[in-house]
Length: 118
Image 1 (cartoon, rainbow, N blue to C red):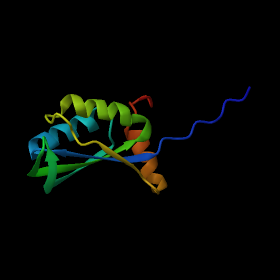
Image 2 (image 1 turned 90 degrees about the vertical axis):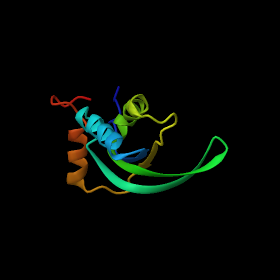
Image 3 (image 1 turned 30 degrees about the vertical axis):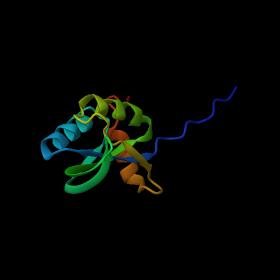
């Protein structure tokens, strides 16, 4: 019996906000260090307006743009929830419509252990 070829993982951008630069940097370092993400961009001073516990809130936050492979996202999300100070951290994943071949290869390689496994 033939086993169908597995589709290679695709790139996902995961958006997450943090209350300050120090928390954002800790999250980014953990995710990249643990190979759950290949890269994390930190965008400081994002103005966020949102509803929380019945009131409109306004805060300055740091936006993390996390680049990961689709097969690593669930573990990435679990790690963010474990490390994040927010009760409900933002975790929004967007699938990339197009990724340059070399960048995709790099992303997959960097989200694997040194021996090529997750």
